[in-house]
Length: 514
Image (cartoon, rainbow, N blue to C red; front, side):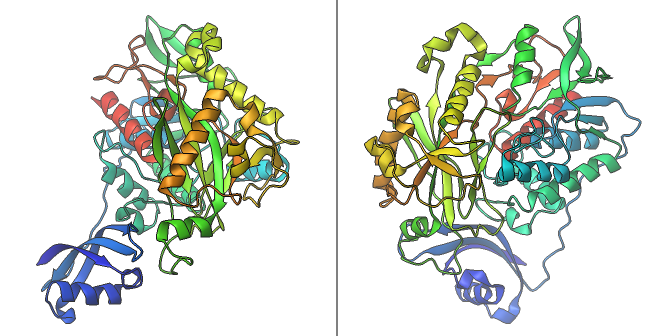
């Protein structure tokens, strides 16, 4: 027999099974020795009061053992099956491949970047001396942008697909079991590469193919039906369908579609800055205590407001993490954040970004569907020009940003390549500058102490999402103009993060298999 209950515990009591077993026994009026096992279904932190609690939903077994749980997927040998091309080995592409294998189709993944192990070297090189491999970096390569940018699994896309299945698939491939129960699951930048490698092995062992260091430069289209793709070295690869899952930074793909007169659409996106505080300060604000309990994780936050009818919000908040250069080409400056699984850095950072719409930059209207892309590129160039040598980032104390003055000295930061003092308040576009300033004042009311000279603002956070959507039919998920072309994931404008991208990739694979 079993019973499901919700229980609120102190962080210490929730930290160890023998302790929470004792408290659960009290709640259900049962002797401890009669409890055979406890399964944690969901776990979250309630920090609304000074007395922080861990809220757990558990399944308590008594009188019988907890049944063993196995995760099974219908992987099969597809080596001789019909082929489907997937452009991009991010979460949308990888999960599309796994789903195709379950459906009896052979995925052919074409990835411009390197395998995750080789990619690690290029990422380390960027941080060390600023050398950028335009096809292997924080954005491009096996695993996609999320691999070296935190590995957070939280998503609001609950109506679009089976989130539990995606989380279970990640657990099956080596992620920690805690992701099955945590309210805001997180794999960690240090652990996600192992999971990605295991997914690759599943694809290869079941007959799929993966081509690394292979850039798609053209599409093979006949009578508005896609037949395959052309790679940079001139090879033609054909298949039943093409899933386009290239990510939000693949500007060349947008240019390719535009030049071939394949319909794309400008869409709203978001841009702003990275803001970093001492983690100790964020802990004290969120947990209402001078010192964080050793039983509590590094505190996080989630902020949002409306300024001038535009959303302004925190993005990819990284407790116990660091800021990284997400550049994909020389002459640009782009930042992002990441956290290791232990979230044990002394810094906390987050993107603070504002919604951008086409009417915000009328001077770019001449670029039509590519207007947002051109605007984003220009801001990234401005950040580079106002930074230091190489990928030294432009930065400012948060208080100085608000007061419109250049910082004489900058606080310590996790950004390894280094920062240089710069008047972000001056060179950022006024509509972005104004909304950020007003939002910081509102966020201070929600988190007293958020505005401080200990916080640093680093520019720019510009790759939160794609400025372009590649349209598709709502039912078939195919491009309305090109039969057999399935735009998918963040780069196509249909997801935002690891889980939602994985769900979208699976949806496309399902449609192809019908």
